[in-house]
Image 1 (spheres, rainbow over the protein chains, first blue to last red):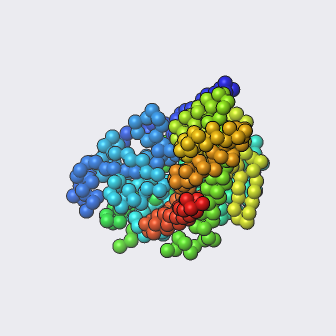
Image 2: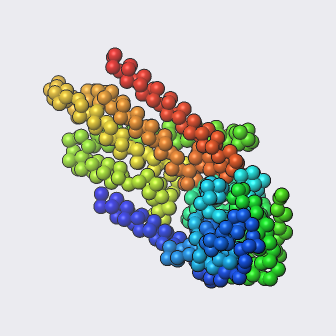
Image 3: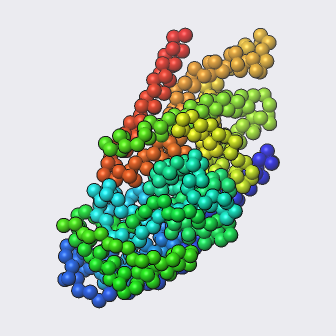
Length: 292
Length: 227
């Protein structure tokens, strides 16, 4: 009985420790505030003008992806590339970063949140797909990334083809897990990427897989223990989600992104957030034209 | 209804995992629960106390925490289930399935134990005294006299426990098992425009399984009442 108790205490400590480790996960600094630009709201139409006049915008981002959208336990605001791009968009609406209301959106609630108007925009590593465009608007892409593998530093795995029939960790219900299965490996799903990192570190699975930009963040956090390998085996076009009820958003977002590509603020945001994990700043992607 | 026709029986395969989780951990919980209740009502004081503590502690721990302990803390202590490697067609039962079964069994067995204890308490004390009077040991008293009657009285609460177990298997979806809810999440992610039909289809799957279990429970109840 005594032994059992000791074990239980140890186990509880282990869990607490592993959770603390997740909490400490940095993610590209805290991010700077971006002041709203001087814009006249009369230039906009519909919902865009409404948001501009209100001076407030609600944006859905991820809170658990270092480098993209990450809010540590002690931080007041999320930080990462998605967040920086969101700040650029807000600034073009004349809104200061501090007036942006950040809402956590997980993969499963992005469409419902947009449809219900709980958020005005979604920048949550949101891949553009035809299926999603049936229910929500997606402008962009502002980043193109691909799925890679994160393995222990001493692993001999070079590519997804080395993992045929093996278990590979990712997040339950994500596009990544589907892709893993398509490539002949067996996707096992967890709640968040940090839990997958834990499973790779304790050796239960040989690898985890999702967008290379996300993996780079974790590799940087666990330097010497984990590495990113393999050529990207998918292409994810990350865009901005908006409600179908406000199609005028698309032109605004596209124009705003175009400006950010041209004047270097986009590249700067990339370097500040994903640069530290060793991802080279790519060329700006081609923006999709807005329908209608 | 693209989500049902695209892909290789993903819906049925995911419910096969759910069903296997239910069946394996259900049987194991009934066995462990019976052993636990024997400890709790038995003549050995140490076992009585240990059984009581086990039930109190495990029953009051959230299931997701039990899962997390075995998934994240246990490997640090060297408790691994890597030796579990059963593959049937495209369905795999590996360490993730094993962890889910262990967590569900340890958790559910406490409820089975208490359901059975309520059944035992409903057997008049005279039955045990009579059994002892004709010279039966504790084992004999339990297995020949008390438990058969207790099981009958316990059918309705046991059915509730098992039905709860069916739905509890869904916790495994964030612990690496591709069961029904995990598959549902993949489908709602891929077919954003068919969310409601997807939810309803998966709810229907659970309802069917619960109906079957309820039917057997009702049948057993009637069968034993007339016996």
